[in-house]
Length: 286
Image 1 (tube, rainbow, N blue to C red):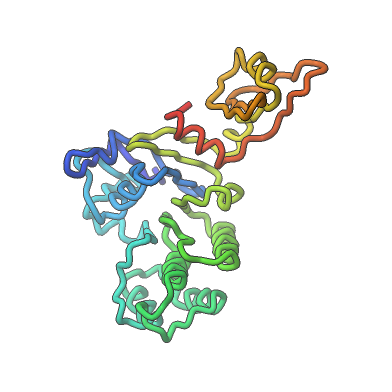
Image 2: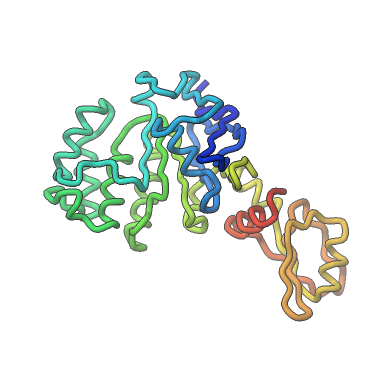
């Protein structure tokens, strides 16, 4: 089965549970948004998948192979992360050469081409790069690897708007040219909303939501107007949250839309992915 299967993963630090019996799958051939607030357990799970730390219990399978300390999955997955795991005194072009030796599927020519597009000076040492260009170097490595599963953990940290747009454009091009699974863990939800196909949301160490982005957004909407009118409309609805200002109210609703009463001044609008994320994490689920 071509998936990353997370099975009942639990991890605690000094008695504090970071992940609590988490189970779900990343299917092959999709772009995922892996979302969670700070401290939700997102980075912990990514580090377990990447074999940087180990779970207290549970297992992870990559294409039905156990992921823990298994060299057979080396050419199947790569994780680009915030952590600086590279030799800071080595030039970027030399990093590329060493990565090419460790990964058969690393495309050195593509790495140099992407570097040119980002104006990344490959003659500089890693420590001489700004935070933004260190991120660009890591992105370049990830985009140049032809492996089935690539995880981007906060990929645009320190990047300006132009560089972020270039990254998203290159990622989509890679996805169109070669079917793979891309997993984007990010706080910039609005930026990736039009890129990701599936969303996985964890909060307080537990899976909160998994689903298709388009389907989720179709089931969520907002109704605003005078508080009494909104409350009457929402009497039989699944309201995940609401905001009030003076006599006005806006309700955030999941479920099938029903017609606004004739003559009503209520306004209906779409709920974007970031609003859905915020409201669900505030409430603790659907």
